[in-house]
Length: 113
Length: 115
Image (cartoon, each protein chain N blue to C red):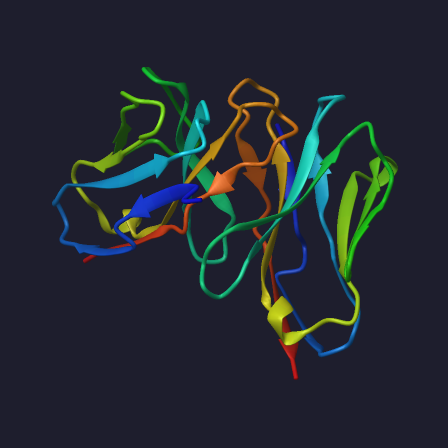
């Protein structure tokens, strides 16, 4: 079972470049999330989606965009990379029922230099 | 606002010691859900346990046990007879009831188990 798959695993960007972090899940989950994890900190929510075509901002959405055209995919786009976006990014999915856990991908480690 | 506090930033123990990781939460909801996740050095997040606010029974799974006390808003995690493989960062999280079902995470406790 693949679960939640994130690509790439590692990436180095130059300031001002753009890129898309890919996230796909094969569990038919309606809810999907993007979190970022900074050193010594817990995860903070960037964006989330409760179904195809529906997205909403989390705590730290500035500098990011998302789309959800299918149930399976939830890409995260950085338009103009800044050093403050250096972080580890996690995608997660869940059924949307409160008593069910979120399943996380392995993360994408992004460095912006 | 919801909040999760893990006051212990880092803990170091010797193998076979018992260790307790503290988690204190804040919420105005009467129904809520708490979670523990493990992040080993390889970086992935592994789900360990879920607890509902209306179920205060403690839970044991092998060497792991969880103590949930609504009176003190705590959901502590104990590892008995720790092993080197338990070395990881452990996160406590609270499920938001605002419709997004997002998780509010504590900052994590880094546990190092030395041989």
